[in-house]
Image (cartoon, rainbow, N blue to C red):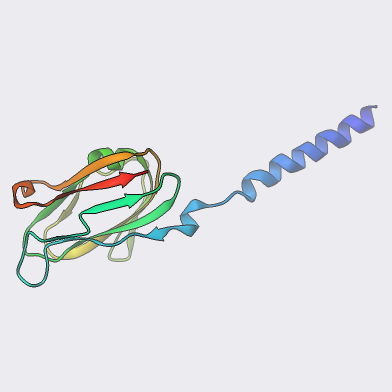
Amino acid sequence: MMRMFRIAALALAGLFAAGPASALDLTKKRENLPDLVLGDDQGNDFAVENRDITLESGKAYRLRVVAKGGQEYKFYAPEFFRYIWLNQIVIEHKEIHGGGPPDHLEFDEPGEIAVEFVAIKPGAYKWEARGLEAKGMTGTLTVK
């Protein structure tokens, strides 16, 4: 009887040990979203390309926020940042990893910042280029 108990315990231990190692790493199967572009290279500093983006909860994504215009852009999306699991932020092939959401992304000149994350909580989250909202620099990131 004791021998059967040991064999069952070892079998269960083997199942539990194999579980996490074989679990799917969501960040390896991320989807590239359309670039959210602020301004353009034609002189329209207040143009926005892909202002409204829809995602699915539980999926991994890369969102590139690209500044092309001549303005200083402060990209705020506080509720969205709060309800994602952030894998990393990439700026010029340099990675930032951390335990909490960023306050905002700031562009002092043209460039791009990539945010890699897993969408967690469904909802419609507003983003804005702070100070330029009246110029139409707002949009929505919707997680379904």
